Image 1 (cartoon, rainbow, N blue to C red):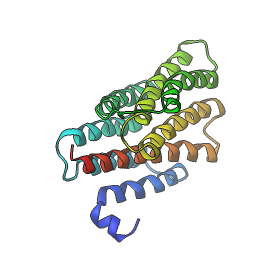
Image 2 (image 1 turned 30 degrees about the vertical axis):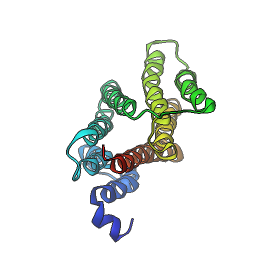
Image 3 (image 1 turned 90 degrees about the vertical axis):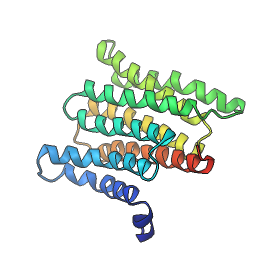
Image 4 (image 1 turned 90 degrees about the horizontal axis):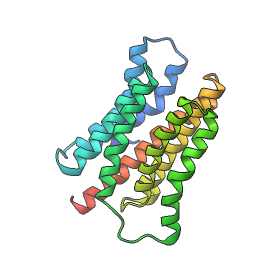
Length: 218
């Protein structure tokens, strides 16, 4: 985060500053709307970063799903259901983008992991929620969609240890979030882990996609 980054990629720089500083809002008194705007700005600036000088094609698709993630960040503070809907739309758009960049060849282990993720992750989510009721199945259904997104990211031609890893971090964040629903909101380490694994997951997804699209010129 030096002056060169601030000059060449201002929205990326602002996004990092906003995201890193956002947890301060957990511990100071400020209007709820200001806190929500602060939260939404982190990924919102990543969407602006995607759009800067790239108002066409796959950059628009990237900006679209990032915008729904940012919207979900805000809506979840009012309603978990509406927040989940916004994130789900974002995942569907991301899956579409990843489907346009299928990796030509996958090793057997890579194929196995891509198939394994959508199976095991919902099971883990359901086990964390530990509810045979509608809420437990809703959590498993939502994270199944997230897991498909992650599997598609991992098996795409985007950098696996950037975009693929970022999608895995997104899963980790949501599993930790489900744990927080059971444990409570008072665990500082858990709160920080949820936020930073989510944000840096989306950050890695974004930068990996932008890097590849720029190289390929598509």
